[in-house]
Length: 267
Image (cartoon, rainbow, N blue to C red):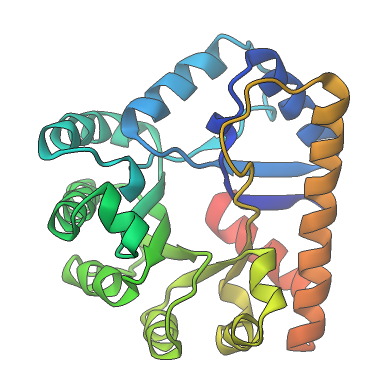
Protein backbone atom coordinates (compact mmCIF):
# COMPACT_ATOMS: atom_id res chain seq x y z
CA UNK A 1 0.00 0.00 0.00
CA UNK A 2 1.50 3.34 -1.07
CA UNK A 3 1.31 5.59 1.99
CA UNK A 4 2.05 9.28 1.76
CA UNK A 5 3.68 11.00 4.72
CA UNK A 6 2.35 14.53 4.29
CA UNK A 7 4.85 16.13 6.68
CA UNK A 8 8.45 14.91 6.68
CA UNK A 9 11.51 17.13 7.25
CA UNK A 10 13.74 15.58 4.61
CA UNK A 11 16.01 18.64 4.64
CA UNK A 12 17.00 17.74 8.22
CA UNK A 13 18.96 14.82 6.72
CA UNK A 14 22.18 16.67 5.99
CA UNK A 15 24.39 13.99 4.42
CA UNK A 16 23.84 13.63 0.65
CA UNK A 17 24.63 9.90 0.66
CA UNK A 18 22.13 9.31 3.47
CA UNK A 19 19.54 11.28 1.51
CA UNK A 20 20.12 9.13 -1.56
CA UNK A 21 19.89 5.87 0.40
CA UNK A 22 16.81 7.10 2.23
CA UNK A 23 15.01 7.80 -1.04
CA UNK A 24 15.94 4.35 -2.38
CA UNK A 25 14.50 2.71 0.74
CA UNK A 26 11.30 4.74 0.46
CA UNK A 27 10.73 3.32 -3.01
CA UNK A 28 11.30 -0.23 -1.72
CA UNK A 29 8.81 0.28 1.12
CA UNK A 30 6.28 2.07 -1.12
CA UNK A 31 6.27 5.32 0.83
CA UNK A 32 6.01 8.82 -0.59
CA UNK A 33 7.04 11.82 1.50
CA UNK A 34 6.16 15.48 1.26
CA UNK A 35 9.45 17.16 2.09
CA UNK A 36 8.53 20.20 4.15
CA UNK A 37 11.04 23.06 4.26
CA UNK A 38 11.47 25.77 6.89
CA UNK A 39 12.72 28.65 4.70
CA UNK A 40 12.35 29.49 1.01
CA UNK A 41 16.13 29.62 0.66
CA UNK A 42 16.25 26.14 2.21
CA UNK A 43 13.73 24.96 -0.40
CA UNK A 44 16.00 26.29 -3.16
CA UNK A 45 19.05 24.55 -1.70
CA UNK A 46 17.18 21.26 -1.26
CA UNK A 47 15.98 21.38 -4.85
CA UNK A 48 19.54 21.98 -6.07
CA UNK A 49 20.94 19.15 -3.93
CA UNK A 50 18.35 16.70 -5.26
CA UNK A 51 19.21 17.65 -8.84
CA UNK A 52 22.80 16.56 -8.12
CA UNK A 53 21.68 13.09 -7.00
CA UNK A 54 20.52 12.16 -10.54
CA UNK A 55 17.43 10.43 -9.23
CA UNK A 56 15.23 8.25 -11.41
CA UNK A 57 11.53 9.03 -11.96
CA UNK A 58 9.57 8.13 -8.84
CA UNK A 59 12.51 8.59 -6.47
CA UNK A 60 12.23 12.34 -5.94
CA UNK A 61 10.19 13.40 -2.89
CA UNK A 62 7.43 15.96 -3.22
CA UNK A 63 9.02 19.30 -2.32
CA UNK A 64 7.06 21.76 -0.23
CA UNK A 65 7.95 25.47 -0.19
CA UNK A 66 7.88 26.76 3.38
CA UNK A 67 8.71 29.51 5.84
CA UNK A 68 8.31 28.19 9.39
CA UNK A 69 7.61 30.87 12.05
CA UNK A 70 10.56 29.63 14.14
CA UNK A 71 12.90 30.57 11.29
CA UNK A 72 11.76 34.20 11.05
CA UNK A 73 14.65 36.33 12.30
CA UNK A 74 13.78 39.94 11.43
CA UNK A 75 11.71 42.04 9.04
CA UNK A 76 14.65 42.42 6.64
CA UNK A 77 15.44 38.70 6.70
CA UNK A 78 11.75 37.90 6.23
CA UNK A 79 11.48 40.18 3.20
CA UNK A 80 14.51 38.53 1.59
CA UNK A 81 13.03 35.09 2.18
CA UNK A 82 9.61 36.20 0.93
CA UNK A 83 11.22 37.42 -2.29
CA UNK A 84 12.66 33.93 -2.78
CA UNK A 85 9.26 32.44 -1.89
CA UNK A 86 7.56 34.42 -4.66
CA UNK A 87 10.25 33.42 -7.15
CA UNK A 88 9.99 29.71 -6.30
CA UNK A 89 6.21 29.66 -6.16
CA UNK A 90 5.83 28.63 -9.79
CA UNK A 91 7.88 25.50 -9.04
CA UNK A 92 5.78 24.00 -6.23
CA UNK A 93 2.09 23.54 -5.59
CA UNK A 94 2.90 22.31 -2.09
CA UNK A 95 3.36 24.98 0.57
CA UNK A 96 4.79 24.26 3.99
CA UNK A 97 5.74 24.36 6.62
CA UNK A 98 4.10 27.75 7.15
CA UNK A 99 1.89 29.28 9.82
CA UNK A 100 1.89 30.94 13.21
CA UNK A 101 3.21 30.04 16.66
CA UNK A 102 1.98 32.16 19.57
CA UNK A 103 3.45 29.93 22.28
CA UNK A 104 6.13 31.40 24.54
CA UNK A 105 8.81 29.63 22.48
CA UNK A 106 7.30 30.81 19.21
CA UNK A 107 7.06 34.43 20.30
CA UNK A 108 10.66 34.33 21.50
CA UNK A 109 11.62 33.42 17.94
CA UNK A 110 9.50 36.10 16.25
CA UNK A 111 6.97 38.64 17.51
CA UNK A 112 3.30 38.08 16.74
CA UNK A 113 2.98 40.99 14.32
CA UNK A 114 6.01 39.82 12.31
CA UNK A 115 4.68 36.27 12.11
CA UNK A 116 1.30 37.54 10.94
CA UNK A 117 3.01 39.74 8.35
CA UNK A 118 4.94 36.78 6.92
CA UNK A 119 1.97 34.41 6.82
CA UNK A 120 -0.26 37.10 5.30
CA UNK A 121 2.31 37.81 2.58
CA UNK A 122 2.53 34.10 1.81
CA UNK A 123 -1.24 33.85 1.41
CA UNK A 124 -1.34 36.97 -0.76
CA UNK A 125 1.33 35.48 -3.00
CA UNK A 126 -0.78 32.35 -3.45
CA UNK A 127 -3.80 34.38 -4.54
CA UNK A 128 -1.68 36.02 -7.26
CA UNK A 129 -1.33 32.61 -8.94
CA UNK A 130 -4.95 31.84 -9.72
CA UNK A 131 -3.94 29.23 -12.30
CA UNK A 132 -2.34 26.99 -9.63
CA UNK A 133 -3.77 24.87 -6.84
CA UNK A 134 -1.88 24.98 -3.55
CA UNK A 135 -1.88 22.51 -0.65
CA UNK A 136 -0.68 24.03 2.61
CA UNK A 137 0.78 22.26 5.65
CA UNK A 138 0.16 24.71 8.47
CA UNK A 139 1.79 25.08 11.89
CA UNK A 140 -0.86 26.63 14.17
CA UNK A 141 0.29 26.62 17.80
CA UNK A 142 -1.96 28.70 20.06
CA UNK A 143 -2.88 30.59 16.92
CA UNK A 144 -5.48 28.53 15.04
CA UNK A 145 -8.17 31.22 15.21
CA UNK A 146 -5.83 33.79 13.67
CA UNK A 147 -4.70 31.29 11.04
CA UNK A 148 -8.32 30.63 10.09
CA UNK A 149 -9.07 34.37 10.03
CA UNK A 150 -6.22 34.97 7.59
CA UNK A 151 -7.27 32.04 5.42
CA UNK A 152 -10.81 33.38 5.27
CA UNK A 153 -9.51 36.80 4.22
CA UNK A 154 -8.11 35.26 1.03
CA UNK A 155 -11.16 33.07 0.40
CA UNK A 156 -9.63 29.83 1.63
CA UNK A 157 -10.24 26.98 1.80
CA UNK A 158 -11.19 26.89 -1.88
CA UNK A 159 -10.54 24.68 -4.86
CA UNK A 160 -7.25 26.60 -5.26
CA UNK A 161 -6.03 26.81 -1.63
CA UNK A 162 -6.39 23.68 0.51
CA UNK A 163 -5.14 24.03 4.11
CA UNK A 164 -3.98 21.11 6.24
CA UNK A 165 -3.53 21.77 9.96
CA UNK A 166 -0.43 19.88 11.09
CA UNK A 167 -0.27 18.30 14.59
CA UNK A 168 -3.33 20.28 15.62
CA UNK A 169 -3.71 20.89 19.35
CA UNK A 170 -6.06 23.86 19.48
CA UNK A 171 -9.63 24.02 20.75
CA UNK A 172 -12.62 21.97 19.67
CA UNK A 173 -14.33 25.13 18.42
CA UNK A 174 -11.33 25.98 16.26
CA UNK A 175 -11.29 22.49 14.79
CA UNK A 176 -15.03 22.65 14.09
CA UNK A 177 -14.53 25.95 12.30
CA UNK A 178 -11.65 24.51 10.26
CA UNK A 179 -13.72 21.42 9.40
CA UNK A 180 -16.76 23.46 8.40
CA UNK A 181 -14.55 25.66 6.20
CA UNK A 182 -13.49 22.51 4.33
CA UNK A 183 -9.99 22.16 5.77
CA UNK A 184 -7.91 19.02 6.27
CA UNK A 185 -6.03 17.54 9.22
CA UNK A 186 -2.81 15.52 9.16
CA UNK A 187 -2.74 12.84 11.83
CA UNK A 188 0.39 12.54 13.95
CA UNK A 189 0.71 9.46 16.21
CA UNK A 190 0.72 11.72 19.28
CA UNK A 191 -2.92 12.59 18.59
CA UNK A 192 -3.87 8.95 19.13
CA UNK A 193 -2.46 8.94 22.66
CA UNK A 194 -4.67 11.60 24.26
CA UNK A 195 -8.40 11.67 24.90
CA UNK A 196 -8.62 15.11 23.28
CA UNK A 197 -6.67 13.98 20.22
CA UNK A 198 -8.86 10.92 19.70
CA UNK A 199 -11.99 13.05 20.04
CA UNK A 200 -10.64 15.47 17.45
CA UNK A 201 -10.01 12.62 15.02
CA UNK A 202 -13.66 11.62 15.31
CA UNK A 203 -14.75 15.23 14.89
CA UNK A 204 -13.29 15.49 11.37
CA UNK A 205 -14.73 13.95 8.23
CA UNK A 206 -12.80 10.78 7.37
CA UNK A 207 -12.07 11.95 3.83
CA UNK A 208 -10.27 15.03 5.18
CA UNK A 209 -7.60 13.15 7.16
CA UNK A 210 -4.02 12.47 6.07
CA UNK A 211 -0.95 10.86 7.62
CA UNK A 212 2.17 12.57 8.96
CA UNK A 213 5.27 11.69 10.96
CA UNK A 214 6.94 15.11 11.44
CA UNK A 215 10.28 13.29 11.40
CA UNK A 216 13.20 13.56 11.93
CA UNK A 217 13.05 15.38 15.26
CA UNK A 218 15.94 17.66 14.31
CA UNK A 219 18.97 17.96 12.03
CA UNK A 220 20.75 14.64 11.43
CA UNK A 221 24.43 14.84 10.47
CA UNK A 222 25.26 11.27 9.52
CA UNK A 223 23.21 8.12 9.07
CA UNK A 224 24.89 4.81 8.26
CA UNK A 225 23.27 2.61 5.60
CA UNK A 226 21.79 0.19 8.15
CA UNK A 227 20.34 3.06 10.16
CA UNK A 228 18.74 4.56 7.04
CA UNK A 229 17.10 1.23 6.24
CA UNK A 230 15.79 0.86 9.80
CA UNK A 231 14.44 4.41 9.91
CA UNK A 232 12.41 3.83 6.76
CA UNK A 233 11.07 0.54 8.13
CA UNK A 234 10.15 2.34 11.36
CA UNK A 235 8.41 5.05 9.35
CA UNK A 236 6.34 2.48 7.47
CA UNK A 237 5.38 0.78 10.73
CA UNK A 238 4.38 4.15 12.21
CA UNK A 239 2.14 4.95 9.24
CA UNK A 240 0.55 1.49 9.27
CA UNK A 241 -0.11 1.67 13.01
CA UNK A 242 -1.60 5.14 12.67
CA UNK A 243 -4.05 3.89 10.04
CA UNK A 244 -4.99 0.83 12.11
CA UNK A 245 -5.57 2.84 15.29
CA UNK A 246 -7.46 5.51 13.38
CA UNK A 247 -9.72 2.84 11.88
CA UNK A 248 -10.39 1.47 15.36
CA UNK A 249 -11.16 4.89 16.82
CA UNK A 250 -13.49 5.89 14.00
CA UNK A 251 -14.92 2.39 13.42
CA UNK A 252 -14.45 2.63 9.66
CA UNK A 253 -11.93 1.54 7.02
CA UNK A 254 -9.55 4.49 7.13
CA UNK A 255 -7.01 2.86 4.81
CA UNK A 256 -9.39 3.16 1.89
CA UNK A 257 -10.39 6.73 2.76
CA UNK A 258 -6.83 7.95 3.27
CA UNK A 259 -5.66 6.40 0.00
CA UNK A 260 -8.47 8.18 -1.85
CA UNK A 261 -7.64 11.49 -0.17
CA UNK A 262 -3.92 11.11 -0.95
CA UNK A 263 -4.74 10.44 -4.60
CA UNK A 264 -7.16 13.35 -4.78
CA UNK A 265 -4.69 15.87 -3.39
CA UNK A 266 -1.22 14.72 -4.40
CA UNK A 267 -1.30 12.41 -7.42
